[in-house]
Every structure is written in structure tokens, then in C-alpha cells.
Amino acid sequence: MPEAEKLIRQVRSALKHDSRVNFHRARIAVTTEPDGTLVLEGETDGIAAKKIALEIAASVSGSAGIVDRLRVKPSVPMGDGEIRDGVRDALLQEPAFARYAVYVGHDTGLPPQTSPSGNYVEAAVNDGVVTLNGQVESLSHKRLAGVLVWWVPGSRDVVNGIDVQPPEEDSDDAISDAVRTALEKDRLVRSDSIRVNTRNAVVTLEGVVANGEQAAMAVADAWYVFGVDGVVNHLEPLD
Image 1: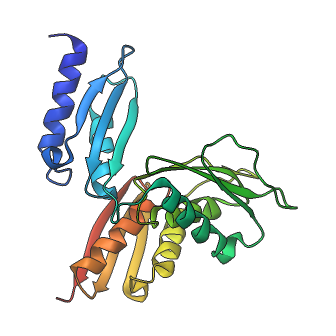
Image 2: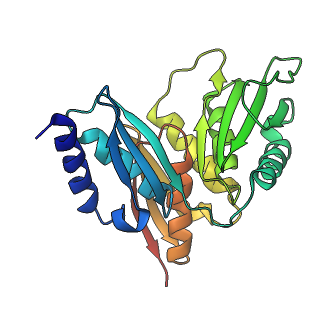
């Protein structure tokens, strides 16, 4: 059996055996490029399924890399124009970006507007995929921008290429802080009863929430944070 075919079968088998991915519902296609790079394509029910599918694929030996073409099924179907409007409003209304220039266009690579500090966020939307570029002053700003864009109902994926200047070393504590910020800013989640701990970029959520829907939203918020490699849900719904 050719190596590429063997790799594809191994990845497909691993994805099928993890119920969190829902392989058949997502209709995940697994292929390889001529150089051996693995390609995953399909539409998952949520951010967790997407990230877990990529993690499973990465754990299969023999892959020279992974091309991520997985998309998340949007909570509300929206055209790119509507998504651009939502992204622009979300960034402009966030106090953390009050001193930033914000540019939302049809494509990346357009000349960005700049603020006196040189900090700006540039967003482009293509088929529901939002690509973020620009320059921000901290990792927390980069992470917050990504979370805000994920919250736009029509977003199917977020590619966060924002540069942090000056460069900042990441840490588990920084990830925990970013997750707490996301939970606090999410108006649909009661964050005061949720505890957040991170170890090796894997976030654990503990505490009591009103119901299963609240727990699911909190878990999604944690996954939305750039740099999170896993989320362990120990939240206890009251109902």
C-alpha cells in the first residue's frame, strides 16, 4: 500500500473513532499533497470538533504537515458583506481597540490605516473565513481580536496573523487570563462561577453553570482563544 494511502486510512480511522469529531456528519475529506502534506476539508458542528480533528490528524505519524480547510458551521448563515459589517462593529465597539485603527476590506494585503502608535487591526473575509492581520501591543489584544471575530455569527473560521510588537513570550498564565477575559465579555455566560486553569496550553474549566448550553458556550469561548491546544470541561450544569 502506498504511504500516502496508508496515512489517509490511519487518519480517517482515528477521526471516525472519536465521537467528538462526528466524522460522517462533518463529511471530512482526508487527502494528501504530492509532498506528503495532509489536507483536511469539511464542515464541523463547532470549534471544538474542528480543533480536535486537527489534533488527531497531527498525532498520526508520517505527515509532513497539515493544511487546515476545515470550516465551522455558522450559527447564522451570513454573506461575506454581513460578516465584514459584524467584524468591523465588534472591533470598533471594543474599548481595548479604542486607540487602534481598524480596517475591514474585501481582501488581505490592502494598505492598512494606522494609528499614531502604529497599532492597527486589518480584517478580510472570504467565504466566511476571516483573516486577521495588523500590529497590536500585546498577546492579549491579539487573542481578544480573534475571540471577537469568532463571535460574529456567520464566521466559519478565523486565521489570526496579527503581529505582536514588541514580541511577547507566551505562558499558561497568559492563556488563562485571556480565557477569563473572553468569558467575562461573553454576555451569554455567567463567568463569576467559572474557574480557569491552564497547563501546557490545555485549559480546564471548573465550576457551576446554569445549564448545558451555558457550559457549551464557555467551552467554545475557551477554544476560540488563540494558542489553546485543548479544553477539559469539568463544568457542572444545574439542570
